[in-house]
Amino acid sequence: MTPTMLTRSVVCPSGLSGEVRKLTVKEIPLFSDPQLAQSGEIFVRLLRTCWVSTTNGGPYEDDPFDWRKALIGDAIYTLIEIVRATNGDTFAFDVQCPACSKRISWELNLGDLRTTPITAEGTSALLNGKIVVVEARTSDGHEAAYRAHCRLATLGDELSGLKRKSQNPTLASLLQRIEGIEGIAAEELSGFLESLGPNEARDLVAEIDKKIGCGVDTDIDVVCQACGYDVAVALPFGQLLRFKRAKH
Image (cartoon, rainbow, N blue to C red):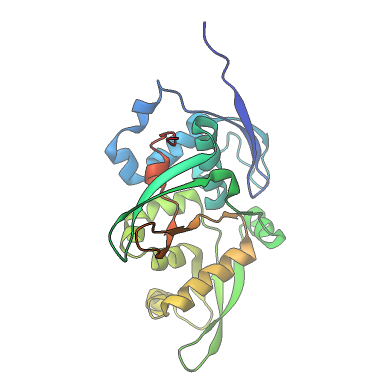
């Protein structure tokens, strides 16, 4: 007797909605290929495998839906929902403390991660293939305003920039999102972004995300039990996609 496969209703930050299901034991070997994980193709395969049906296409017009064209926020949100459908809400992970080098064991409820819906401007840009203009400022002693022309980054963009992201995540995020800066020649764009200070770069990414929306806050604050140091980490997707249940 084959057990009934239960599904979970999800509504993504863009308004895309549908049903997802858990990953089965039979399917786990399909996701054990190291090359698949290294290239990021594991994300596309997992989404295609566990997305059962589309209830509302939201701002997307493709049918069948192409996950490579999905906004990053929708893809991350759906991946997290698939993990919740498979293992439940509790996710346990380990990180190394940068202060004392001890291992930090931490748990969180995946349902508590904050989601930001897509903005009206973000929806319009996605439907019409337009850019979004974001105003930002430099703060290197002679503060000056500039206008960045931004695109809506997709899962396909994320996968194509994985190698660059492993070398410099902040710069990779900017290059993924920014099509140009007013007054800066195209060939000088990378150099301009590289010259931003760390706080300026993070502020620019934050301004872009605020203008477009459609995101999941995967930055987590954990505390080292050994030395009390507060550590800000990104949700470790490598551990998340091992589909191991938290121990109690």
